[in-house]
Length: 207
Image (cartoon, rainbow, N blue to C red; front, side, top):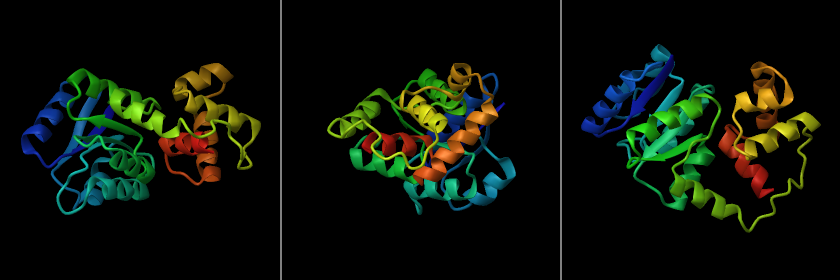
């Protein structure tokens, strides 16, 4: 069961998304919040796997909310769910620790697919957002000039992440367990000084 939290200040949209999630097989909305004021205490109770988070929230912005969630719940993945598609907001969210970026105009099928993808190790983004991310690195060298003391296997797995492969695909490619993949990825995060897959890929592409 994928446990999902929704943080959205628009009551109609918040209830609509929560209802959508509750009617999906293998998925449940465990909490729906209008702001981030009680997010830590609420998440300690419900322990969501995935968070759909708006950026334009009252009191505390969604960007700061990503930092709060990742600092307190490092295994919880954050999927930004917003109307903002400007470069600054996208990269602020990724730098803060978001692992996916979905526009609110996405269809219900796209929302569900993004949640499942993120749960399975993907980094889902709306197509227009993905294009902006790709364009931002087109002038940079795509060769990893510094190895950051990565082992040969860690480099292989980092390149798999850069190619958009899920954890499951990596296990199949190298005949290793999912726990081994997670261990390698944790070490990669530590050596690159990042907190999410999106940050690791961005740093690798930039370097």
